[in-house]
Amino acid sequence: MKTFLALVRREVWEHTAILLVPAVLSAILVVVAGIASVKLLGGGMDIMVDGHDIETDQIFHGLSNINLGMVVVFGLVMSVVATFYLLDCLLADRKDRSILFWKSLPISDLTTVLSKLATAAVLIPLVTVAAGFITAFMLMVVVTVDLLVLGGSPWDMLWSQVPYFSNLVLVVYAMTVGTLWYLPLMGYLMLVSAFAKRAVMMWAVLPPLVIALIEKQFMGSDNFAFMLSERMSGFAPLAFRTDSLETMADAIDQGHAGPGLDVISAVPFLQSPGLWLGLVVAGAFIAGAVYLRRYRDESI
Amino acid sequence: MTQLVCAHGLSKSYGDFKALDGVDFSIDEGRIVGLIGPNGAGKTTALKAILGLTHFDGELEVLGLDPRSKRHEIMQQVCFIADVAVLPRWMRVHQALSLLETVHPRFDRAKADDFLARTDVRLKSKISALSKGMVTQLHLALVMAIDARLLVLDEPTLGLDILFRKEFYRALLNDYFDGKRTILITTHQVEEIEHLLTDLMFVNHGRLVLDTPMDELETRYTEVLARPENVDALRQLGPLDEQQSFGRTVMLFEDQPRESLREFGELRTPSIADLFVAKMKVSRK
Image (cartoon, rainbow over all chains, first blue to last red; front, side, top):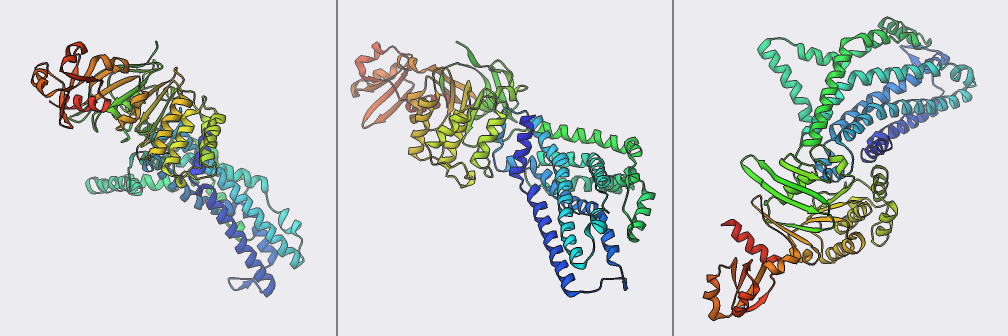
């Protein structure tokens, strides 16, 4: 375990984007919010939405979902970071020729590959949640200053409105199901990373594209492309109750409280064949990546 | 005497090219073995097989284990420095030290710190900011702090200036080698390691063309600085090689008793470099 954590730490040393990107994004968001609120307060301007004045307390009410909103923002950015990380993680050592140094350590290739997978599948989601919540907290501090200047009560209008616990549960749930659902994609990217010598992006994009085109050409069907698009977007309808998602969207529009824990629908998600088939495929891709890492004859 | 490495019929082909062609050899504990051969002779392939970095045919045991399946266990007690096994450029020196400290059960941090303190390598430096000589010093510090039974060095001093090269081997002999450890070295710069080897192996075209302890070299190989009138008579004895040097003919004999050669001219033990050249010419025929 100590070895495993040391290997994950080594990934963070090498791939600084994992911490740097959320830190910079967080700083930018807080600074922008600070500037915006200075302008807002200084200008004494009315806030217009769809040509109507809206009550400031409605805006602040909407802020009760700021935790979720921030995790979504960081989630989008970090999924890009994770994609590039996975494509690079088994290639970088070979490209900078340090592979033989890594192979000189008494660490099995399975452990190495799993430490890289854990970086993408566990560490990056944790960083995402932490960055989202920390940034939301700092934005709430900014808003608190605004409220104090405007003469509102930060506690009544903001801090007591946020369902911290259910937000945290929702976010952890979403990260978990998302990671499980996207695990085959992660495994695929790792396999590409272990295989390609260069042009790793091309190797990642080309095979699925070619398969889809061949299927279209010779069988006239789109099953593969459909399956891929299902994999990209398919977990939300399984893991969340869409009907309550819609009512939730309405509720947020009206400035009411955000989603509660009733949107979670773990059972249909766990029962879906897509999840388990995906995990089997992920296992195969990762085994392939381990095999390539182990037996590929790296030119000395 | 324990055998650390034991190979029988070790073979490896890349398509039609036979990098190793049924090689037998063994390496005993406490020896310093030089594995010498021209480029493409199979040296590196042999090292890769020993380190579990490549598939091969035949039998090979390292520390009694099969490197094909037990690579990471073997690497607990085997270290290697290769010219091409570069340290990751993004890493800082202190990161390398703390990583080794955590993942390597036989790594002694204090030893590495001690060795580095005698160099210009700073703990905060990024490896990409170090000179090639300093990177090698760092690598040597990491490796010397590991209590390993077998150290494999593949062209360890390639591209280093003479000061670093001398210092490298000095440190290796004085601070590392204790008579129980075993070192396997390949290099082109034969002259530099000549005095520290206990055993010598030559490979060419994937075959072992020489495998001898250094102390038998003297009895098995003799160089004769032939007097001009003796050249023809000496040729009758079938020298391994013949060269002109400062107007004199130098002939190299294998397994020819010295007593029988003494009458033809001045005798001496050939240098490894001369022996190497002669052996390579023969194995090419």
